[in-house]
Length: 94
Image 1 (cartoon, rainbow, N blue to C red):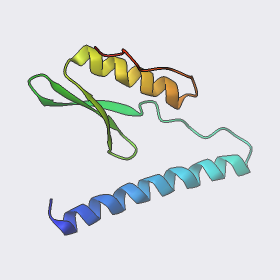
Image 2 (cartoon, rainbow, N blue to C red):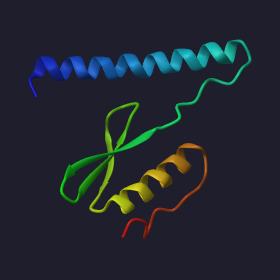
Image 3 (spheres, helix red, strand yellow):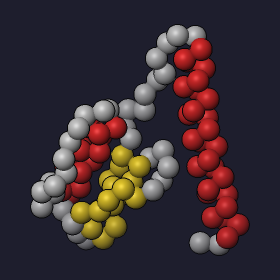
Image 4 (cartoon, rainbow, N blue to C red):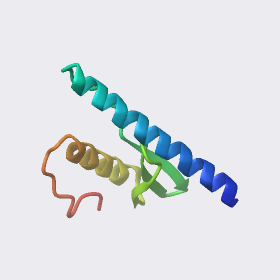
């Protein structure tokens, strides 16, 4: 990717992260729970049998699998971890 475009993408990601943090701070000041993003991770098809699991907030790839079912299992584990559950991913998605 062209350096100027990459800088713009990274700037947009940083602004999104800051906006989310400021929203959470605001809700904390008024004593209410901040709204929660309903979907944190997304499966992106990268080939006939290749799937990336991408964190929507940052755009970073958190893992990859070679079947849709395995990718969905990884998404469910990552969502559970983001909600605070202790989940072991050893053996998942195979």
